[in-house]
Image 1 (spheres, protein in one colour):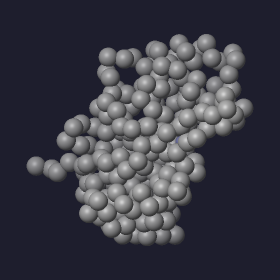
Image 2 (image 1 turned 90 degrees about the vertical axis):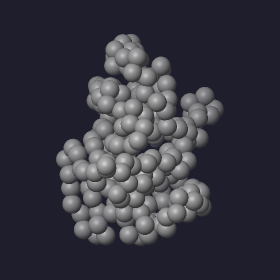
Image 3 (image 1 turned 60 degrees about the vertical axis):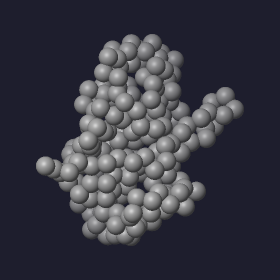
Image 4 (image 1 turned 180 degrees about the horizontal axis):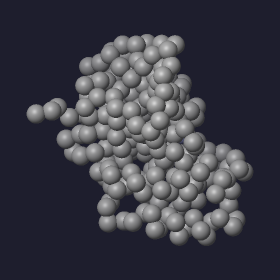
Length: 222
Ligand SMILES: [Zn+2]
């Protein structure tokens, strides 16, 4: 029988507004996948270096054992320890770097028998996520497609950072249907509650928001 993958959250991310909505204390979730390949998904901020090294070691790996580093998107708090892994192929957006040799994919990229990189746009138009087949079911590591568990209750929270909210609502619903667990961009892993129809819930909220809200960059595209 095929050996399935294990997903280990190295450090859950967080995002907490301070001073009203003027600034935010934030860091991205960092995840390790042990499969036929060893993979790190998102690498946090520079301050996370020691912690990443500690957890990698705890799982009996050296940094040179990591075959792939996958960044769900290019924000600073998701990419800042990429160079801890000297042998890893680097996937950011739809580009694959093997040292300085770049190749490209469109929607899906199979990494091994358990792991697939797939388009998860909305937060920005180059966002990707990772689908992982584990003993417990399908785990989706989504970057900022999902911010945290329960973020569908108040869509204005994640839409503040969304370049393409309509795409994001659609892709969130797709992942919700597909996955048993989600590792969000700024929170810990959670089980998907299939009894909730986030598509209709979020679409309703979004319609009410359109009149009055832009994203924090002021360039929302509807
Ligand atoms: Zn983020």
